[in-house]
Amino acid sequence: MAAPPPCCQGTKELLVDFDETKRTKITRGKKRGTHERQKILDILAAAKVCTVSYLHNGEELRVVPQLFGVHEGWLYLHGSVSSTMFKNHRQDKQAEGQSTDAEAGAVVKTKMAISATLIDGLVLARAHMHNSVNYRSVVIFADTVHVITDKEEKDKGLRIITEHVLKGRWDDPDARNPNKAERDSTAVVKIKLSECSAKIRTGGPNDDKDDMKNACWAGDVPLYRVYGCPNADKTTKGRRISVPRYLRSAIEDSRGASGMAVKPSDEGVLTKLGNVGGGRQQLVSFLMGAVLAACVALILA
Image (cartoon, rainbow, N blue to C red; front, side):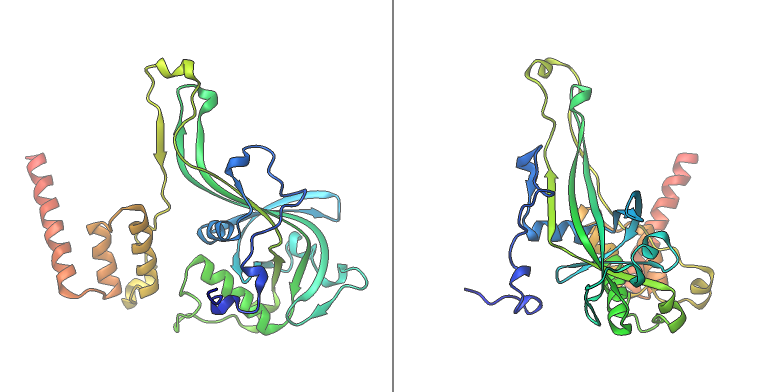
């Protein structure tokens, strides 16, 4: 048997699928449902935002969108210490007998549901009631939240969230780390990934047999998540600061995954600001611009 990867050594639970529970049992569209850990982690890795639902003061339902990060079986969230959700998870609300340590933080009992969804395409059927979307979605349930108070653990959580949004950003040597005031005003919590399920839909429409004779276009339309060309602010433009390599890589990777190439106009901006690629890319950008200008001139002539 092959050895587990370094991040998972000595952590068997990171290698096994999630158990089905009463809350994660999939009752409709069972064929689309899964409790496979890797599929669930892949969906969370692709999503940038999750929706957090929780009970405020134990009775009032609240829902809020959140940036998040996932690392070694935990989902991390952050926000202002004065926000309603994080006030709800303050240490002074923890029940007697609950543990507190630097790594786990203060364990606060609270009911919470978290979801993340990726829309991969429109599904257009011959009958309106069969229109749908192709999607990947995850739902997570939790009964406890770990409030992180230790400085190093809090920075670790903030790093995980930042890297989830854009890989490489936290380690940018020109970006400043949080100072004490920022750290003190920011709450960081983590939720154990233990009750999780996913549903995935792919393919075209499922029309009724009688509707197949209709002369109506039917099929699916893929949707892609693609990075656009970065817009530098005034200071960045004035100082001609380079587009960092990790940002350029994220743009190229997103467009490569969708089959969309970097446009010549974008390439010019990336080359000019990023100082990446040398004269050949600048020449290509110049020639493409010249061709475009000539085409416009012919159309207007």
